[in-house]
Length: 303
Image (cartoon, rainbow, N blue to C red; front, side, top):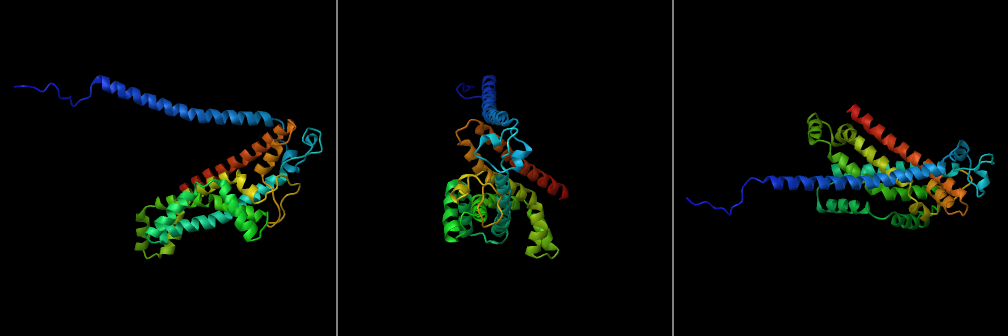
């Protein structure tokens, strides 16, 4: 009885197993190094900002308007800081949050719960996903053309908020849709089974279950918006203001604009002031992210 010596064994040899394990370890090492590059770069950046801003973030810096004279920022000076830009950023992001929550969550609920499954709906969803990758300067030009000129809102706080709303609206819609899709259909059917209407199902069953994901996605999108410079630059935000914004239709400034103004000044000490502004901006960002984590945890424990 002849045997076929040329056929391969169905069992892998020890050398093949060792080679696959080696490839796997190399791949894991490459992934780890890729992650390490980002973490080290971020750590070095934060360390440099912390070093440059050490001793410059004071109570006077948070509560006084800016100045072009570096002596005002030094200890013993008359006092100068980031207060108008800080208040402007808070008001700007608060208005953006109001517009974004109503428009973004409303659009997501309509597309997921009310819109029929058709080619037109798929076309809309595909375009919303594509809009999430459009550069921010394009939204700035759109805000300039629509809100500043067509609606004649001028370089106002509400024009900046509406422009930032356009910027993050696709992101919020997509994240809200994913959160709504994650709600099991069995919960919807159970609510329909006890006689609830479609609106009652959405209000009492779907939205409470999807709220952790919706709020987390919304606040993370707002965290991106608060650091954007190009859109508010295009709608005419001031680089420096000496009074806090007092009207929705009045001029405004924001922390990214103020930091940019300090960074381009020739005196070396203004680099420390700019670093102090970056620390304040990062603190606000971290606070917003902490709120997102808290809201998500709170809603998850209530479900």
